Image (cartoon, rainbow, N blue to C red; front, side, top):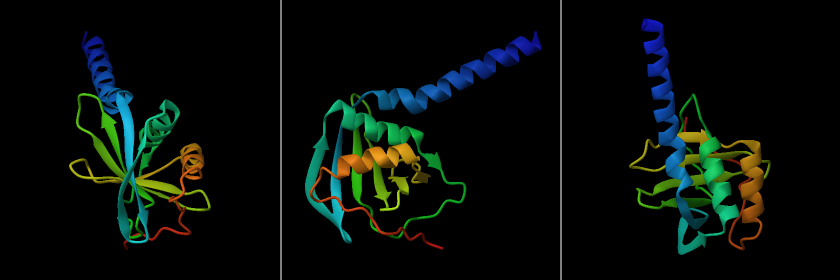
Length: 146
C-alpha cells in the first residue's frame, strides 16, 4: 500500500514539474530580440515570427543546462530576447555565442537569473539564424566574473 502511494506521488510530482517547464514554452507566439553592438543594446527590436525560428529559440532555452558553478558573464551579450507567450508572462534572456561554438544564456528577472550552457545543436541553429541578420556578430570569447 505504501509503495503504491509513493509511486503515485512520484508520478504526480514528475508530471507537474515537467508541465511547468515545457508546456508554458509550447505557447510561444514569437521572439522579440534586441541586438547589442559593443556595450550598447540597440533600441531597434527584431521579431522572429517564423515557426522554425521560434522553435530554435524555444528549443535552445528548454535544452540549456544550468551551470553547477553559477557565474555572471561580464562580456556584453549578442542579444537580449523575450519569448512572447500567449496568455502568460513573457520570459527574458540574454544570449552569448562564440565563434568557436560555445553558447550561454542568462535568465533575466523576475526569473531565477541563472546562467545556462547551450547544447552544440542549439548553438549551430542559432548561429544559422544570426548569419541572416546584418547586425549580429559572434563573440571571440566570453569573460566570467571571478
